[in-house]
Amino acid sequence: MARDRLSRVFAALADPTRRDLVARLSEGDATVSELAAPYDVSVQAVSKHLRVLEEAGLVTRGRDAQRRPVHLEAEVFDLMTKWIERYRARAEERFRRLDELLDRMAEQEEPRSRHDREDVA
Amino acid sequence: MTKTKHETSIIASDKVPTITIIREFDAPRERVFRAWTDPELYAQWVGPRSVSTQIKKWSARTGGEWAMANYRDGEELASFFGSFHEVRAPERLVWTFTWEGAPDGVSLETMTFEELPGGRTRVTGVSVVESFEIRDQILASGMEVGVNEGYEKLDELLASQA
Figure 1 (cartoon, rainbow over the protein chains, first blue to last red):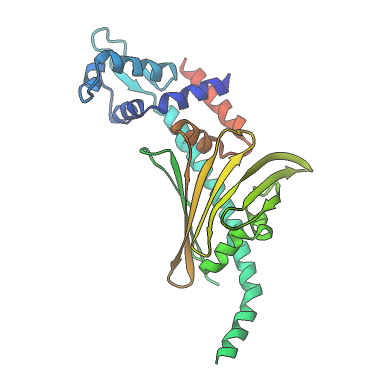
Figure 2: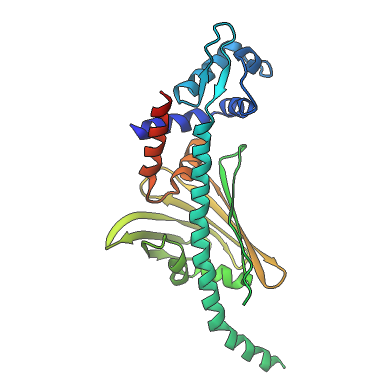
């Protein structure tokens, strides 16, 4: 179940137009016609993209019957930011182990390289 | 010995499905490259601390192949394989990477080892995958254990919005 939902979020964000809509909504709520204005596509096509984002839980529509502004659910993105941070933290952990290994390698190599320098001198 | 503090940076492009990872090391380029291409050295640092990494195949030359697996308490957790597309010591390493849990997926990873003043090295790794969806899944899961925790959190979050 969770996996299906997550897949829906990723599938929704896989499309460049929807990624762009999300980027614009991060600056503030907007109506469908405002969102459609810069694109060379119909309002209907934009509505379809918004429906995909809505089904994935990424955006909600306001109650105002006339305007129904689209609102970005920022929490979902906070979660993604957390995932990226966790990914980064794991890489950092790995590289700290590499730091330690490089130090051990240096201890093993330095007597030899001092010797090499003596040879040259 | 004074240690400079380095932190890994991650860049997820919004134009192409890539993950860029950048890190600096207090060691000369040849040594860093060796730690990346010698199987015994690589196995010592690459896996998570709680698991052991076993290298099964490793021909670190242009056109060579590699395979490895992670174990915890003797039980295999995940296995990975790929090819060394190019090994150009000590500056460039290009390989393909597949996690056997998602056998249709493949990442093309290019690692660049750049010399910095003072005998230091900057490593930049760029991984390219097939789609943004897969890229985001990799970021979310880290291709490791603990994926379910992420799903559970998202599940809770989505449920709370319903």
